[in-house]
Image 1 (cartoon, helix red, strand yellow):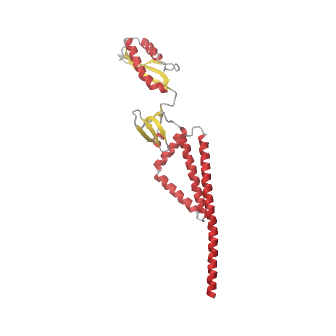
Image 2 (cartoon, one colour):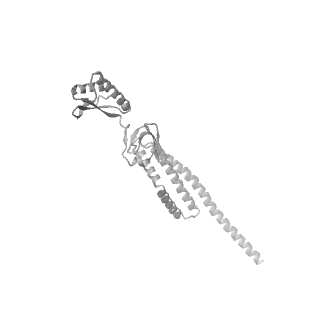
Length: 268
């Protein structure tokens, strides 16, 4: 009888403990579910709010706004995950330290990639070039097709596809041929010393001013740039719209050659 009573008491104690554990972990489980759902909804709301706020800022690119939206969203989800583990009594301090160590290791392993991301963020914020503009650096030149976080896509004047890592563009001087609305053009022509240089200058100015694409201000000018025993080199300067610059140059060369030839002036 005594053994039966002890067994019954032990069984009752075990069931009581199991019940207490079930209640405790059940509440923790419910709390974790509520925390996960609430954290997911809240992280989505905050990240979307951040995206809309960044999109309203002048100069912030769509790609950059999306990038920060994802960073905020997943950063908050990681925080929620750590809080959920804390609900079950897990020591979150060690988890945060492990995440920090893992982040450091990943950062060292992906150092070059992270440099490209950092450079991509700076390019998207400062905008030294935009899609459709023609740029030139010491290593690449072409028309911008797309600016991403890791690399920039270009199309060369030969029609070739070119992908440049953002770090190479950020760490070198960039010449943007398309940013300014107007651009100056320079051409040089050498004539013999047996001709009237003043008359040649007037002829060149007449030909240049006859092109409607040439800007009146700043006014075109022609001046003597070099002198030798048998020739005088004249330099022609004029301004045109950046969009017309290349075609104006080609047409101007033909017009100058034809105009001088029709007046009997030989080009040296």
